[in-house]
Length: 111
Length: 114
Image 1 (spheres, each protein chain N blue to C red):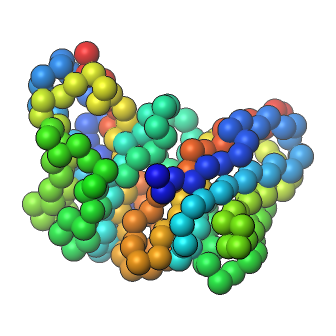
Image 2 (cartoon, rainbow over the protein chains, first blue to last red):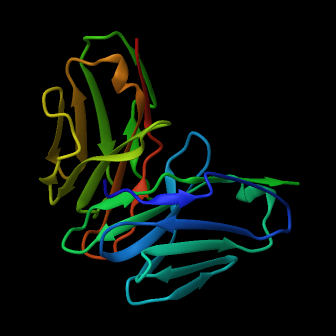
Image 3 (cartoon, rainbow over the protein chains, first blue to last red):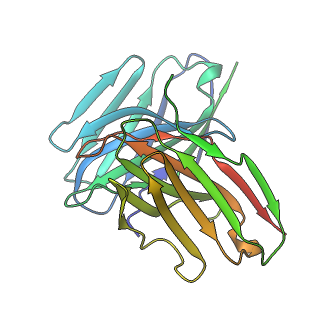
């Protein structure tokens, strides 16, 4: 399977704390993307990091990529209750433009 | 706001019936993806189109599933005959195409096959 795996499967934190989610994948990639899914809705793109990049920021989001370890992490700083959602990593393999999603991390931010 | 539109939002049907799900990609997007989401399997890629041509449908059970793009504004996913194991949320997503594209997802079709 080309699916990535995310860790942890579920994460519960207090509002204001930081949340870190990890993603591991198996194949060579062009890029890795993170998406968010609120319950019962479609996924929303958050951030894309190219294979030649090591770190990227967008607002309260920080993404790192280690292609030697085939892993990525998503850090959400100063979490809010509204950040409660499932977060998925997705990889675009080299030689193909298909996008394969990981298993997701369910984040709960407690007010 | 431009968005991907999927219909129907919910579908309940009996085993053996034909199911057709529709997707209107964002105007100007030339790639369309179909995904299926279940608790057990997560998000599975079923089919992928570029410029209306199917590029990859290896994730789709060929005996009962079919995906088409009759024109640039409509993508369809059909299941015939449907089975209870097809119960899932089916998502359509579209993008501009090319490397490093991000996808825009529809709200999904919740399918229940009884």
